[in-house]
Image 1 (tube, rainbow, N blue to C red):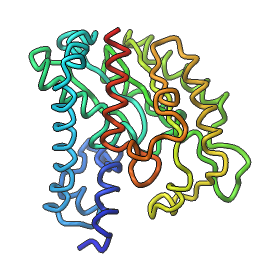
Image 2: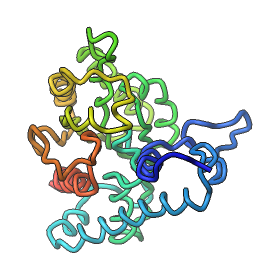
Image 3: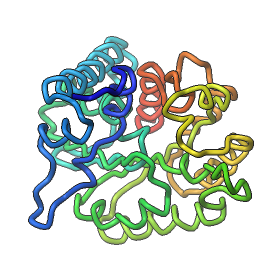
Image 4: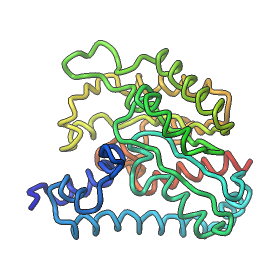
Length: 279
């Protein structure tokens, strides 16, 4: 079976979900055995790792709801019974223990009778342009709300061609407006946006997975600040992670890759989101 070190295997399973992007011509998606094979590991090992993240998200929801102020804010969230809420983004949303997965558990514990459906449409590595390409899936989910955190991958520069980010700030804003326009016109969805946070470049460079990414990190935070400036222009509530988390982001709020929020960081994001919408 897999010769991938356990910690790296756990890392990639946390963020890379082939069942979201590998659909056969008949509509059949990956089952657990196929996903385990994708990672060159045993299905039992895969399930233990995946279920461990689910347990973490559940525990995080319980911890947040132990705060009566947070619980009261959850009661005021404007998600109508029977509605669908889409979490749209990249790996920070796709994460098995992301802010959206914790929110799913919060509702299961606190407002289960409301029957609100949460759809995780985060896909690791996506830019604003790639979200625009798959916008039909967002429309088909018929969301009443879209909670969108996208733009981190727009800021990456290729190490071999450190001339410009993947997507310029101007194009990021164009894509964000187009994403909003298409979904809103077809579904009437309401929106909340989350800006990308900054990262820890030196920590990223030292991480085994990030070091193989081919990213140039010389100006990454400068580029992430430029992307966040575009998100702040959207005409909806915005959770500004750069203002919330600061620069540099405290190390305990990030995983060892210096990029993705830790479980504690995801809880901070969700607290800010809930506070914003409950207001």
